Image 1 (tube, helix red, strand yellow):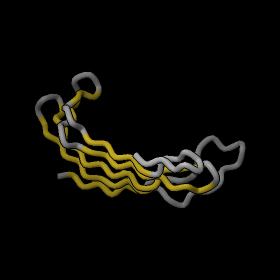
Image 2: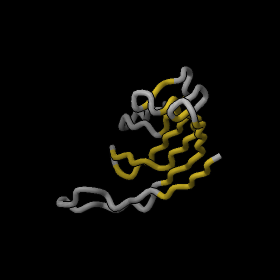
Image 3: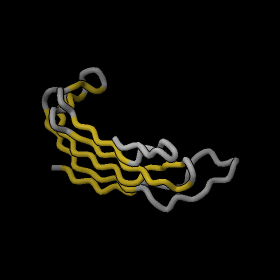
Image 4: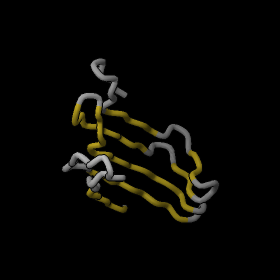
Length: 99
């Protein structure tokens, strides 16, 4: 993880699974070696928003089916929300590849 001294933002974080773990009790077991890379973009003073998120995951569903995921989720076209707005209009575009 990197942290900027000017505004304590963290533009990038990488994570890698070193021990398998369960998600949803026993629904899925995420395997060792799965990884996620989370990148943020500074859009204003002290305001960081997600940019690309890369996921490379290997899981076992209900102990039966293997599932591999290699995805890049990209966020862009951020627009300033009006004070009354509840959610941002930015929507992710997904580039998914199932193996």
